[in-house]
Length: 419
Ligand SMILES: NCCCC[C@H](NC(=O)CCCN)C(=O)O
Image (tube, rainbow, N blue to C red; front, side, top):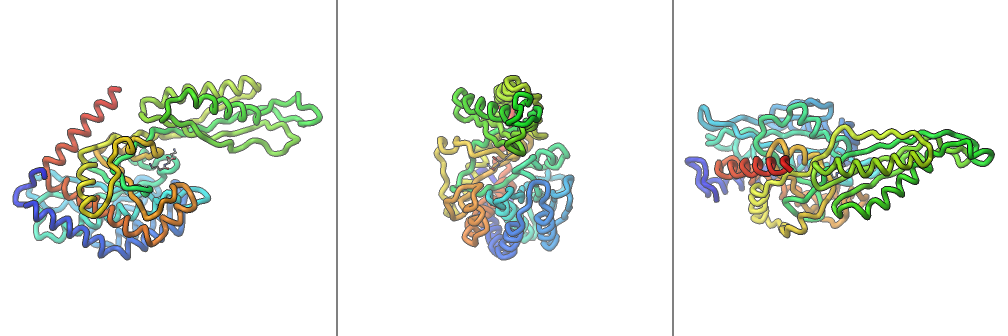
């Protein structure tokens, strides 16, 4: 164990961790109600008004929190407690917990973001409850809960980074529902791409030769990308849909639209996959005589800048709660998708862990939606929150640990950004 702040023994820190766990258990019912309220009303990215209202109400009803609704974004919020404790002139250590709460079209909370909101809120209550019960908190601590909308589409965390929401935070935590407990997975950098082809309508039977077929362009592009895949590195991803392909069989389509995600292990590789994909889209336009417009999403999602120091501390705490982590580095290198937490990890040291919720269903399926709303998920969600709260207390009471987290972050960021 790293050396602790003066006048705090390892036993006292352990007692604080147990106190945080009790506070989380005591709030179990209201946390479950919060989660199910969000789960019952799935809302899409940037439209999470009911979830925003539920979370703002939740923290407004908890003593000691300063709550800001519509914080920098219409459906973002911030709830802060502190700074409290310490001695005059002590540096504040600001711990951030992130809540996601956007759902997916047609299948609701199939990624369990209602549980992400719950686990973040629970961990924050645990840390605040443990520190608030002290007659004098020996560290100058602050807890910040940040409601970060639109992870599935657009990247609300990126908007919040640009608006300064993460300034002053020392370490951030969040946890994402999955099929197993793991402290890190190699989430991919990602960019959205919308492609629009414009052709010329004509009667498809009477005089098709007078038309310029935008659906042909879409199909050619889709096939170009399908053969390109063989030449992509195994972790790279290009996948998408044809959103519009025509209106009637007897009208040569004069418009088609495709929506694609391009993904690479590192943010620095995105330009390369974009270049390859663009050739596939533009050549289809050339072959059919269509005009083509390529529109990239407003935010590029970054890969996660991992912090092994923080991951290990989290794993140590989780194991005391019975969490069995997948620690095989190989398993942790399996790409799982993308998250705007990646962008956060390049401005604040943090961890985006994954946790089992009592089901082997796969994310983005109707089965996972059911699992995320099931009572069975509560035990695992609160257990994860306790592990996060315990790790936050380690960071607060072990200056040496916090320094190692900061040193690793600075070194990893320098290495990543220097290519
Ligand atoms: N710009 C679109 C981003 C899609 C993000 C989406 N995220 C998830 O499914 C959560 C994965 C957490 N690692 C994705 O398709 O990856």
